[in-house]
Length: 201
Image (tube, rainbow, N blue to C red; front, side, top):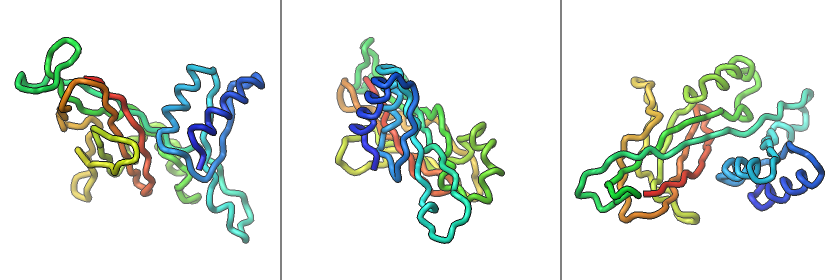
């Protein structure tokens, strides 16, 4: 597992060497690593490219090397709505606010896509990433070390292939302050991608 601490060390070493980009290969990556990667670009001017090592590389009889592909990219942001006056949550302006989450970007990790299908879907996966989301859920008050709570979720069915990209939970927090929401996405290949979103009410 490639961790946040290791990512910081790699970014610092890359910056000290005068580099601006570094490819990081690993079997797995710590959750929320993309948030740190984005912060490191702002802080050090170094972009870390996260590349998953394909498990097929361990096959003894494989003749051609499997492709090395970047991990999935997921981005989301809070959407603030006016809440009823009876709400206990008060925003900075004194008004009540409820919160939803909007998906703003999803790039499918092609690392888990069978080689035969890779070329056929590569272009579509880049242009229309949301088409490859099968299920997504939100824990509006996520805390590290505690189980993920499905406060809201949406998913495709055989009869209904539509999928919301903005939740309609209208979640209300118990008191003003800063909170962390966790967004979990499962793509059509069964791969799980999660990020956190900072919320302030």
